[in-house]
Amino acid sequence: MKALGRQGTIGAVVLALIVAAAIYGVLLPEDGGKARVAEPYAPPGPGVPLGADDLGRSLLDQLLIGAGTSLAIGFIVATLVTLLAAVIGGMAGIGPPWLSRLIMRSIDVMLILPELILFILAAAFLGQSFGIRVAILAILMWPVPARVLRSGVMTAWARGHLEVARAMGAPRWWLLLRHGSYLIGPLLIPVFVRSAMRVIIYDATLSFLGLGDPTSPSWGTTLYWVQVNGVFLSEAWLWWALPPGLAITLTVLSLALIGVSVEDRLNPALKEVKA
Image (cartoon, rainbow, N blue to C red; front, side, top):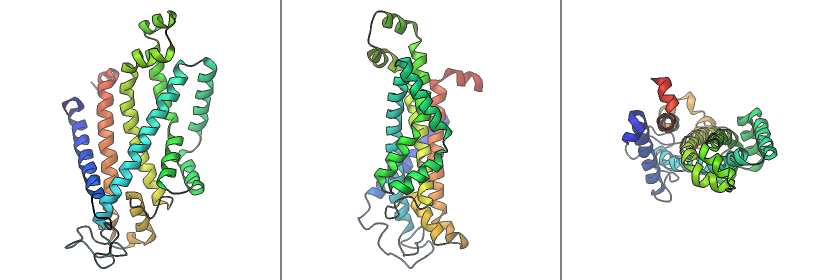
C-alpha cells in the first residue's frame, strides 16, 4: 500500500470494500433481489435497509447483486481492451511502415467518430445481453489505449541496446517481449484502470437508456427502473436512485485515485511537474 501513496491507498481501500460487497452479492440466495419482501415503494425499515422497489423487492439486495454485474463488465472489458491495445499498439510500433500507417489511420478515424453514439447504436441493433455489451465496449474502446502503448513501444524501441540487438538480427517480437516489456509493462496498469473507469460509466449510461439487460440487476438498470417509474418525482429517489449513483461515483473515483497514483510512480516527469 505504501507504494501507492496516500491517495492510491484510499482508492484501493474503497475499491476493496466495493469488491467485497459485490462478492457478498454473489453469495446471496438465488431469489435475492427478486423475491417480494415488503410493500411496493416501502421506505427504509426492518428487513429493507434501503427500502423496496415498485414490486416490493429489496433495493439493498439489488445494489449488492448489481455491484457484481457492473464490476464484472468493467474488469472484463478493461482486460480485453488492454490486451487488444497491447497487441495492436505493439504491431504499430515495431511493424513495417505500411502496417503502422494503416493502424494509425484506422485509429484516427475511430477517434473522430462520436464514441457514445456508436455505443448506443451498436447496443440498439446488436442486442442487450452481457456478452454483446462486453464485445461492443471492447471493440470500440481500444484505439486510445493503443495509441498510448504505441508511444511506449517506440520509446523503448529507441533504446541503444535494442538498436544494437536489432542490428545483430534479433527478432523484433522477441526483443519487445524479452527486453522491452519492463518498460512497456507498467503502462498496462494505468491503461487497465482508465479503461475500467470508462466502461463502468458507459455501461451504466447504456443501461440507464434502456439498452442494458433489464432482467440482470446492475447499477445502471436500477437507475433505468428509477426513470421508468418516475421515482425522481417522489422522495423515494433518496433510497432508490441515490445508492447506485453513489456506488458508481465511488467506484470510478477509487479507480481514478489508483490510476493517478500509479502514473505518478511510473512517470518521473509527472513528479517534477507537480513539485
